Image (cartoon, rainbow, N blue to C red; front, side):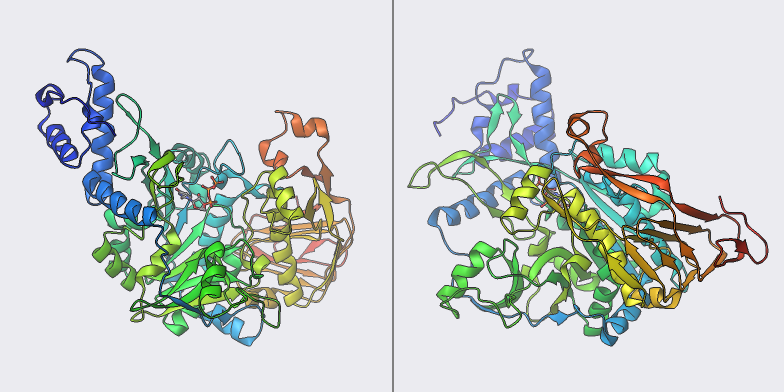
Length: 615
Ligand code: UTP
């Protein structure tokens, strides 16, 4: 970069704090930021905004802008050399806990996890742009299902409320939401509009992540979009650790007796299926760090969890799939990432749901200030790796926290059935279909909804109900199992044991629908015909038993959107990202709004005392 002409520093600002920051930046070789400034009186507003941007970033990044620039220079020098981050490391299997079968040990872990609900807090990273999905709103507002149209945030809040109701001494489960400039206002607006989804305002903490300045070259010069305007870019979901440190929230939760933090993503409607058992594993095995994972086919484009030993380190971390195979070939496996007898890689797929022990987490935050393993990924335009195609920036990933948990900490991996624990909304319809065609997971609105109902069916099967699935179909070239559509609300059941005690016998077929909401509902030998629907909502204190009922009605119908509806602005965007809507054609709905004991008998009539008329 050519040396800019020297400026008259005193003319830049009269504010001593700003002058000090300018001096620091000049010290860090950033003179170009202040070169060619206009005389006082010209463009003063733009200058003030520019200095305010610099001051804000300086105070939000631990170590300030000077620290950021120094880190960038070090990482860019390493990138230029092309040094392999795993040089000297040998990968080993991470010895996962297998939770893919619903056996006695699964029940034990769930019970342990359930007993631990009162000591657990949740962190939802929701600052992502969602560029691949291209949704105009925030992803937390997207409905996980469109039978009753429940936004992800409402579903998560309902899970937390259900956890609270299962505590011996109920107390609010803290929820920390990380937002960004792109999502903050809409997240707050959604919370306000829905009365915080039934949560107490005080139990929700919003932490907004800042953008970081982009870097123009290997010397760490900050990039300018134009005079008085930095190029700013997202720093990645790893920011959550820095924010939990600088806000003091992690330390405060630890001091209040919370023992575990669960980190999760914005659109994974399955996460609470696996959570009780994962928490139980963390408790029983004393894990400081527990990654939820799924079985992965070798070569699949999902980061693999591997134990890496070498360079004086012994870590269980996420290794990106395109780095894992060459590392294996260069060390222990000339054939690369090969399948085991069940066809899976020895290195389970990371789903970025983490259960972290607060005692060790706060200690690590203290020593690192929450700056977790930054990396840089510049795209060079020349062979000497000196010129970037476009400005780059330092990034962080939430899961790289594991790099700081060594052999002195207990680090584990809990492997669940994929559809039970993970199904996200990441891709628009066309890209999802292309991914599906190429053999990968589509991760679309429709597939996430299909998997959501699938988890409901799994629960019914585990409880012994006969579930006859409708055949899979393609909607906009994406796979969807249209039924039975089963929604067991978190208030009804959070563990398999709860489902088993509340449901006995019965059958559900084809495109039937079942929605159960409320803690005290029992189904005994209930049969729901193909296409029919039964919806029961029971308020707290309402005990409802349904005995020998045969449900046959026109239920809900899944209706594909026409080409015109797909193109029409009048069609809600959350439907257009899945290609269908679900219409009520005559579902049987029982709503119990007063406490009492009720029986729905074989005729469908509501009996017992006090008699409550169904809506
Ligand atoms: P994704 O990988 O889904 O990325 O992030 P994204 O940024 O939302 O979507 P694309 O890549 O633009 O299509 C995984 C999780 O991390 C959060 C997201 O909100 C999501 O819950 N995230 C991502 C952040 O909180 N901050 C970030 O800077 C990036």
